[in-house]
Image (cartoon, rainbow, N blue to C red; front, side, top):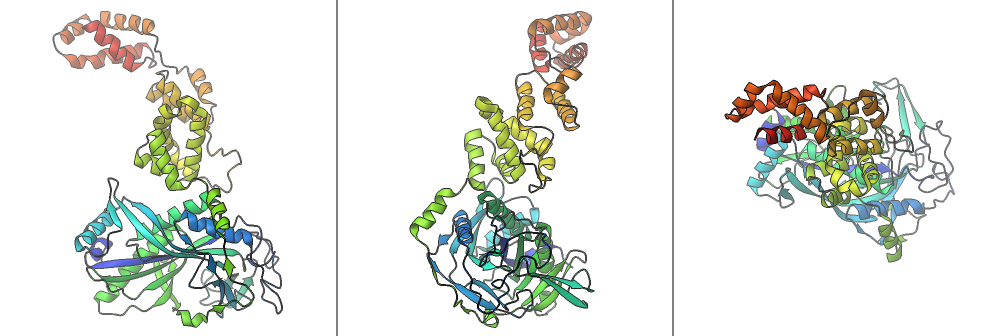
Length: 528
């Protein structure tokens, strides 16, 4: 099988995503009062409405409508004032009423977009370079210092209810193939769910992963979902087809269903690109079908032939009146939006003079961003001066620890690591004031992370404070220069490389606690 780089010489992938997110910050289901509770005993949160029993009438959840409007405003969508729900009919047993209540062609949120900072992979850059040479519909790609900025269109974000959960017994790893019987839990049926559908603007698996990561950050920032991919509250379907580079006709697409991690999204799309290219180059045919990504086998497997819109027999939901959202309703939600991730990154650059790279990498991880913000608050008036060293500390020394924390299980005081934000400020302040050298600061940080106490505790116990008293250092310099009169003469004769010897001897005399910068200045002054 060819490598991705070789395939992209000939073929152009066209990728669109359908990203589902449960509105987990709500307390009840979409059309009834049943409680939302992950992990509850099976079938303990059901009622005649979410089970679709005769005579039961649905009532829309107002908070869910507010949440989807928040999502639309945060992703640059137009908010449609008038829309309605439809019945989407299908025969799977995970919906007891045999239809799903969803929106039709006009959703609450239409015609949005997000902008991605695409950097990193050399294959990705090569792909973009080739695409730009072709000159076919790539006005949404802008070259930047960091890589590429890609404009990705959003077709719509629509509201629907989630289906129940099925567990297949006797099959291979919980799949229906080979199962002897299946269990159904209807607790999840009726959970408020929003689905974002992108335009087919994505061109690589890496771009798809970046889009989903960015959307997750936005949803978490506006507080509509915990976006836990492990619990299934955020998942993705990936649609992908190939066409010959330089052509505009779309190929036949396949859909990868229920991808529940960024890695699965990336790896599943990558496999499909390679598989489809191999089939097409051998003269075969790509069929429109739904496929399952198996991470253990590292391949996709056919699930079913893809249904068309006609198969769902969509018709207006007779038990729900059309919606007419007022301007006041929409503007009240707009006014309540918090700072969005892109706005935060821009603020880091404008207010604290961080580089685009540092600002983006801190802003992209919620725990790192919250730690950085808390540290800036502790720094007070010195925040601007200390922002860059604090950013370096977060990115170079704490990032792995911060980004590995499960935000849902973190304590309410946001103590993501042993080093507190205020202690981080204390550490970089000591370095800034020349009371600690950078080497000593790393020693202190390691000790604090190992649980030896606060920054001041470690500095005091280990006697690590840097000596910056000029009168003390002058005496040490005088002693060292008196020790090496011949070297002093050689230095004055032009052998300036001996400066390292003098500084090293002074540092030895101070047991490594002398301020090396100040020692250099004093030695240079005395040798002139």
